[in-house]
Image (cartoon, rainbow, N blue to C red):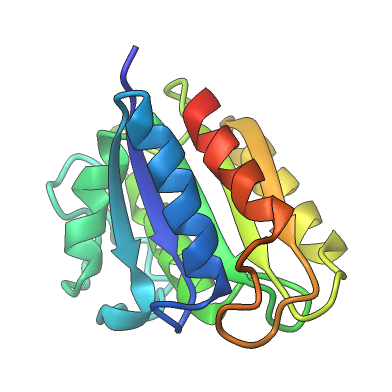
Length: 182
């Protein structure tokens, strides 16, 4: 059955190693009929969460702030799978991705929780100069537990710093295969 997949790409580099993982995953997913929508967060205007608890999940744009998250909310609400893609920054996900994740909380407020559960699954795609993914994995695993999303897999590509270092790496094939198997 074809799935609706949303990718939140938290890399600041549109053609960097994280984006190479995203591209490979997308190729795999689309090859089996899934629909993929990617949001390149580094090119979007997304403000930090105000912590106001003023959101309302029943609204088309559930947050009190109106910025480019207004494009992301409906896509996430209608998704079967949410892919979190990021370079490793200070042992966790990039600020671009974390800001968007914080803002998704608006989908949990109000009359119904449109974020948690709903049979949704998630994938983690990460690239890093080093190999210290443990804290990012711990955060991802806790997030999956909180949201009651199924962990569909992770592709972690360490040892890549400069743009293009992931070229020819096994992890690109792993990302492509994970996309195909979703």
